[in-house]
Length: 155
Image 1: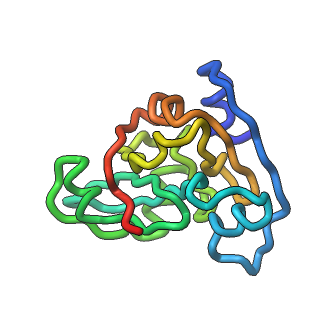
Image 2: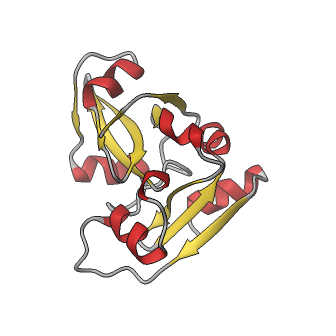
């Protein structure tokens, strides 16, 4: 069990886990989940860690989109953002790249979920390791991650 799954269980929210065999040669983890599980790409969200004005923040966007760094900075009250170094992201969240979940992070970071998630009954995010996705209601995702909704995806 991962910290993400434990956090969802502890909160008592409704969720499902989807597991698949991760291909180690695959580097586009979110798109791999879409392909292997046969899910709509706009409903599967990736968790990206950025540095905003020297502090880490998280953007959660569809795997079919890119994180708009300027929009993320604005959403968390900052001015300038860049993608965080892999090591910094892994240390802060407690997860490895490709398995970073917005839930159950070692250190809770300011988190923004792209507003497009609100259009779905359920969204899919990493459950804390490569090859494991958690399906939950967008409102539960935001509540559990202490996040907000904002337009942070660029298509």
